[in-house]
Image 1 (spheres, one colour):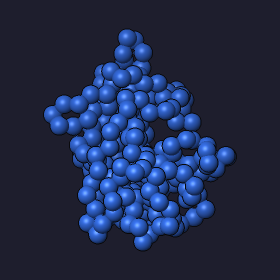
Image 2 (cartoon, rainbow, N blue to C red):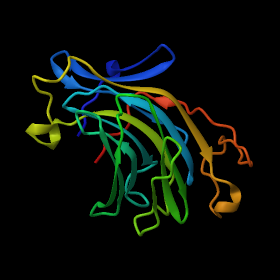
Image 3 (cartoon, rainbow, N blue to C red):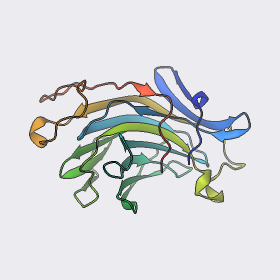
Length: 220
């Protein structure tokens, strides 16, 4: 479980801030979830993160109903490394939580743009405009719709070494400058987009800014 509070989610200076800290003596963090859900498409996030043990900034795709019709999760940037110099990509699928994983190396205390393309036959991950990994294996989601979730997870549930300690700053913030969401081109899939309000696909699609709710469902 990743305990959160709405106090940890703020907007200022044209950016979204998810801040892990002690709130009323409790170690908590923040997160938001998009209400724009679709099957297939492209998601882009420009982000950075403060260093600090005890928190893991993550940008992921989460299904409309976890476990129905399938258990699926796509973490296209997860940064548990306290120094923020490595990040992980995880594809989760199935009742036993099978995983495929790839690692990124960059200084995530600086701004980076991370993107994922999800189409019926592959996932491609794009850090800073470079295709670093294309996955075509059996863990591809096939039956669900998904939406963007941004979280600065408190990670103490992963064991004592993942908890906040004496080296951790009072506040550890994940900053998000912007996001862009594109539907998949109609020629790439026979499955209709799930959200009628999604921007119609075109050769040069227009980014959509999703509405958000203050707290996403806890990750399983």
